[in-house]
Image (cartoon, rainbow, N blue to C red; front, side, top):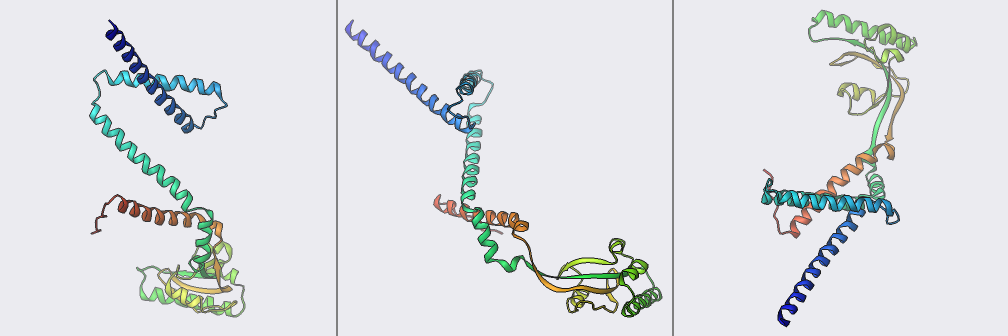
Length: 264
């Protein structure tokens, strides 16, 4: 009789311990859940509502698993794959936030100044447009027309007026032929070589490009223009994050004893 009573007491204690451990684990999980949801400890009403929802979902999921409709093994694999993805995602989120901060972006901008500098020139032009189907005679006639524009411009006739009268560039003609500041290397080589060698007020003889014949006037001499930090910081941050993530991934692979496959 005594042995049976003692066994009963031990069993009850064991069950009570298991229930206590389960409750402790559940309480710990719920605390982490509140952190995930950013719910402050002072908001007792919301915490109570969330606790009820949390426990309800917990019980519902356990009951659903017992219905035999789901492949438990497959579900475990799916959960594990999601867990790995989440771990890596959260890790790199925190890592990159610390590694590529505002100061790192500013330092890169300062130490790579030339990367964000470019030579530009402010020009206006008159375009006499050509196309590949034109005959030689038609091209010669248009070239003569371009030389006429050049001569009149050199005779101090207003360039804006010549652009409006002759230019086939429908966009720049509205601004008297003004193309704005053009970046070196971003335009036709022949055009670029000519205009970047000119001075303010100079007018070029007709320059032939794939568009036709250009008569160009330099409005402001070539100068080096640096892109503002605010304009490029987004691109710098993206570039630094890509490099940092690649380097950190390689480090983690080495720690895990995994050799990266050689690229073909």
